Amino acid sequence: MEAEHRLVEQLFPRHILQFITEEWTSAGRTPAALGGSPSGSSLRWQPVLRDCTPLATSHPEVTLLFADIKGFTPMCKEVEPGQVMRFLNELYSRYDALLDKYGVYKASTVETIGDCYFVAAGLIRQDEDGMAAVRQDNAVQADPLHAERAFMFAKAMLSAAREVAMPTNAQPVEIRVGLHTGPVVSGVVGTRMPRFCLFGDTVNTASRMESSGQPGAIHASESTFAALRSSDDQWEPTGGIEAPDSPPGANGHAEGFASTPAI
Image 1 (cartoon, rainbow, N blue to C red):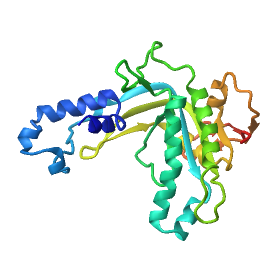
Image 2: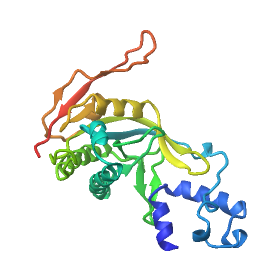
Image 3: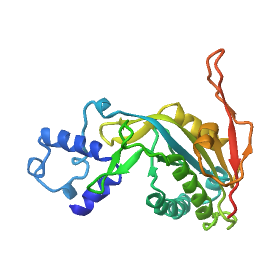
Image 4: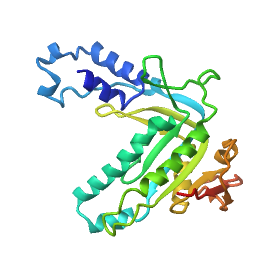
């Protein structure tokens, strides 16, 4: 059971786990009530939640990172699905091994699929029991280094990716990375297989910073660039991005800056 608890702790922050446990217990869903162990019927042991909106938390400033693989879609047409899975597992395992080192959190959105890798810095802290807990909206729990953490993680990702070969041509993997800093809301969606996700325009902008970037480079928004207080890396303006659905008269332009770290 200890291993199972540790696995679940990797999927949800502490307040989400507490909510799920309370829901589960109040509904009488215990091993005795089910007449067996979790291993006997895994589907029956899936938590069924009610309204999860009270779990929503506002975060005034975090830095988000999106990364994807150059040539991933055409690659999927050329190799077997099992080979794609093994390739992504090798690459993502390298990314995952860097998360704790740089103090960032592997995040999720409702739409995240395929080769997209999504990380949040300044969102999660480690509590006194060593569990993941969301940072509250106060100065005590705020992380002033979230932009630096995301940027350092991005550089480590670029290096780690080049240690993995593309299945089609054995060339080192090249990735695009996008960064954006701003407010988000975290919360849970779904009842049968609940997911802890992030919401807000900051998510959309970070994703578009990635998709408009160049392979081997980090494309940061102006807000992230301004938050990088001590970066000695070279940056070049890119012209930024335009928000496709900006209301009339609104400034939908977001300036961008690119850094290509030496690897």
